[in-house]
Image (cartoon, rainbow, N blue to C red; front, side, top):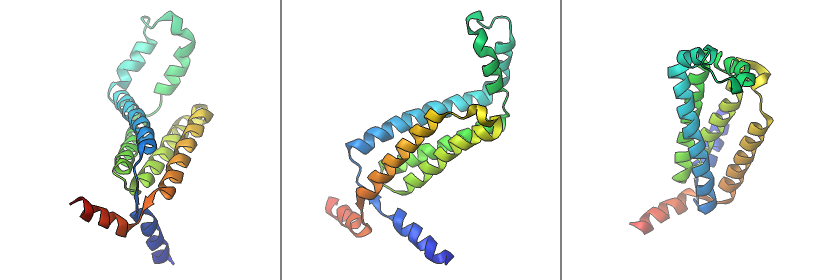
Length: 167
């Protein structure tokens, strides 16, 4: 039973995707977001103590007084959360790269990374970090990628024929 399921999963993700302008546009947006969030989380991992000291310091702008408690709550999370977020964004970036090359395995990596991106802050900070808008955007992108991947697929024999034709 397990071998049969594994063969089916391999067969589904072994085919390629025709990479058109719609997919390229969405992948560029996803890649840009993942790079920005990767750098943000990496910066928090490296600079967290100095950021918290700056927020608690008297030099913190008084116009941001109402955001002070929320920022302290956000930065009070363990560094492990930010390291796990960095790993999730590495998965997302890898998935975008593979999908841009036309491989369906990128879709699997992207999906796992996006699910981790939603779950990790909830596990460390509770439901206070739950944002319905983020979840809706993730679902929108995942639905787009899956519909696109399964309607614009290239079978293995056609992919091999295209490689021979290009040479």
